[in-house]
Length: 199
Image 1 (tube, rainbow, N blue to C red):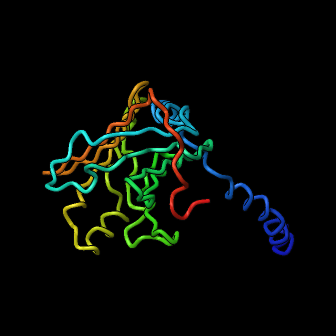
Image 2 (image 1 turned 180 degrees about the horizontal axis):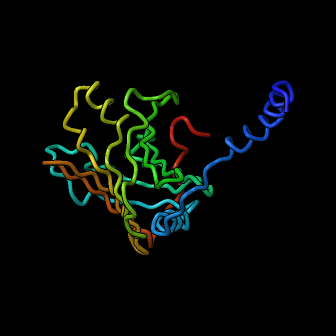
């Protein structure tokens, strides 16, 4: 084969090679992650009232306010769960299947729908966890955000979520800090307003 014919053969094979290289990697499916995700999505469209059961910070800002979680929007890969604190509709928990586990992000908005200066922080599972419980240690983006905002103690944050037939729990822990809210899943309540920034 001449050099010219060899080069033509190589050029003609490039589209096929590019196609092979562009193929997406298969998503990893871990049963405990899927079960946890599905256990929450079973409540899609429902809202539930909760209460602070642990808060070791003085003068907790959530005290004496109505706390509501709303499993508002569910797809095969993402759950959007607004967390209302009294009239404050700025918070939405976003749980996403990433192909290597689950991600938890805290979407914080201003009343006009614009992003809060502290938003989309959270973490990613680093193990299989359990069907009833997953932990989300702070990711690199969140750590950098916390340092930039002058709250380096939050670099050690781990968020946890527990889902049982009768109760959902949101928990934040780090050295010297624990915050926990428990929601009663046996008594759905009227859906709250849309969270700020969402239709």
